Image (cartoon, rainbow, N blue to C red; front, side, top):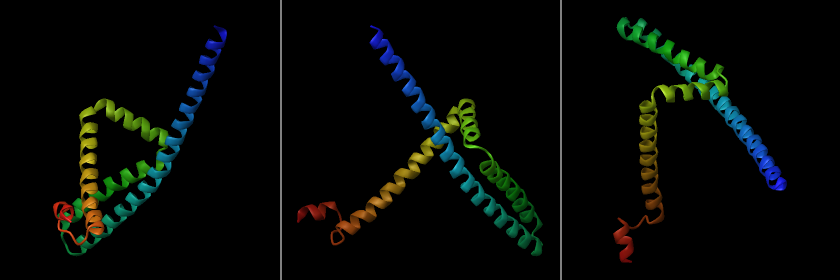
Length: 143
C-alpha cells in the first residue's frame, strides 16, 4: 500500500511542478507579446497626435480635441500593456472575467466569428487555387 501512496505523492508533486512551469511559460509569453503590442499601440497614439496637430492647423478644433482625447486613452492603454507584467495582465483578465462574464463571452463569440470568417475566406481562395478551372464543387465533381 505504501508503494501506491508514494507513487501517487510523486505523481502529484510532478503534476504541480509541471503546472507551475506552464504558468510561468504562459506569463512570460504574455509579458513578451503584451510589451510588443503595447509599444505598437503607443506608436499609433503618436500617429493620432500628428493627426490632432494637423486638425489644429486646419482650425478643426472639435475634431482635434477628440483626436487628442483618443490619443491619450490609446497611449494609456499601450503603456499599461507594455509596462505590466504577464502575471499582472493575467490577474487583471481573470478579475475582469469574474466581474463581467458576459463581456468575456461576447468577446469570445466575436473572436470566434472573426476567425470563422477568415477561415471561410481563405478556404475559398485555397479552393480556387486547387480547382481553378472549375466554377464550383459540383462542376468539379462532374468531371
